[in-house]
Image 1 (cartoon, helix red, strand yellow):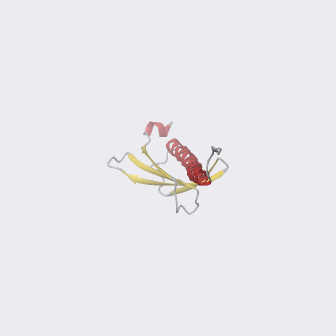
Image 2 (cartoon, one colour):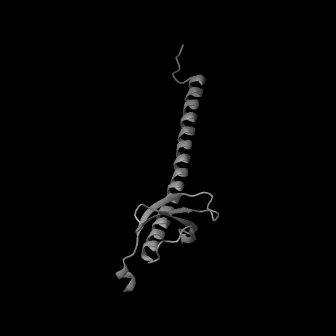
Image 3 (cartoon, helix red, strand yellow):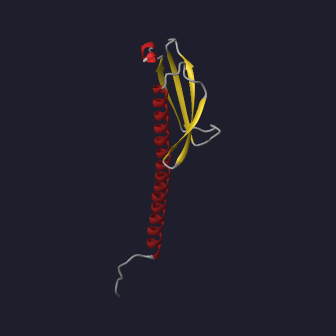
Length: 128
């Protein structure tokens, strides 16, 4: 009698089950990773839009800065909507400005909110 070496049907089915479970776990992890990359990209662009708005705000001589000002900006083939909220601080010559950025024109959902502080412009700078 010859002995055959090889795998039984049960062993092959168990190996296929293990391979299928491993493969589905890898596919889920890859899908989650791709989803989070898109979110990180949106948050990065929203931070850039907020930074641009804060720089525009610091370049103007308007005092105090306008509260609840809204606007939009084009970046990365998308329209980003920003809104600034001005808060009074303990120092009368300093204001806290929150810039909220999102992709929604109604400002119902935002991606980021960035805070900066704006100082009152000096009188010498206003006269020159």
